[in-house]
Length: 355
Image (cartoon, rainbow, N blue to C red; front, side, top):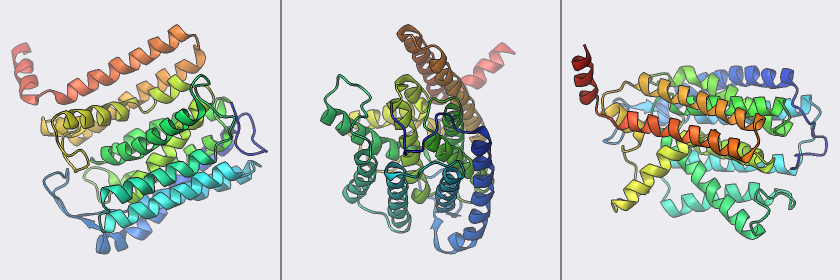
């Protein structure tokens, strides 16, 4: 276990956590409203065969989310008397760097290789700032674990970007995860600085939500999805570094499953996995007859269930209990993926036969 900053407190003050949430939501909403007219003029995302929207919609609202989250997180840490040390500064720097890369990619798509290199650099900045004493699996060689964390970090940044293809989807994923991480900080299972940053990120997403409500008036864009993925990945890494590996796996399990299974299926079919597509389970669900709100509600409820299971792993720490709770999470995610894959025509026939 380790703590960020020399003045790190054991338990994040609930008052600071909730204040960060509220202030970040307000600031994010105001910043989003302020930049939206400019985005409508210069950053329209035109629909194509892979899009879930049918009319040109401005993108880039994630810039307001990231700025609000970082500002309020820094203010919350300062208010709580925490020292903003090198690890936090590195995270904030990496977040701003990858946000700038995302902004360029929104304006003019960047080729795959330079994009991956920039993401690796951002993740690498965070990894290099980790204390040398931090190791999630002590039995694993230090260099190998760091390499695996780098690969996992790049993948997590990309999967959040991949999954941000439906109105409110990233809201339905980010709010439960950040809410759980903030709560874990209040119970002493996560460093206070990290919990405050997660609370600020969750609040910023809530402030953005009214603009992204189906049918969305504004998209996050890569300027939002990439740094959000980086911040969430950092929060989960911090959780795993405290010895709560099962907890860190359960929280993002739906995103991990949908994105990973989809990319493996596409690779098996010899498709170009780096090309945009509409074959994620949540996209297939809308093609199969579910409404956007039905999909989002399902994902949100699933993430609340996963957060509850994750919290339970902190109470029941025996290996058997950890595996049982992980198994419950896998079953819940698998059930949703199967539900999303079903044709609504079959469901309709079954409903008629029952009636």
